[in-house]
Image (cartoon, rainbow, N blue to C red; front, top):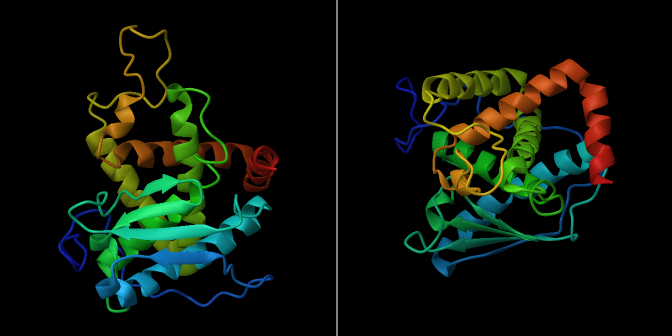
Length: 239
């Protein structure tokens, strides 16, 4: 939409006109170990929504050179009044909980793209957040940033480099506008009780700015190291 909102009127970085997924050939068959559970009345929307996960997992497994931790992934749609925020799935080992309000169908555009990317990021968290956990709350941004980089890979593969660049630019503008000094730094060091120590509570902030900032830092590190070197380092940690 011209006003920067999706088809459902929600905010967030707007998708450009080219939002239709592009076919892509893979050197390996699509991942099939994904199952979905939810209210019977939402079965069609749930089935369509779940199709995003195998597409994302193919990209992630290829990039990381490692299979999905646990070998299977379950998507569980909870009633909107009891589930998580539509843009913030809850991730566990081998399972992703989403709100039924986040389900989408073939005619969804803006909201469908946002839900796809939220699901892709939740799938990336199976590696960075579940398999590899931060040693301390101060290191949580590393997992957030790496999951964000995988999500960008999925976005680039399915919608093209132009769409990925457009969205990353929108996120960085939002970070610059929102990082006015009230947002804690990505990495807070110091003993418990020290000034500025939030004991990890900063991750409860519903704003996505922190995650976008972590992804931007990872993108900077990737550019400095080079894509191939950065990928080899990440693969070494995942192996």
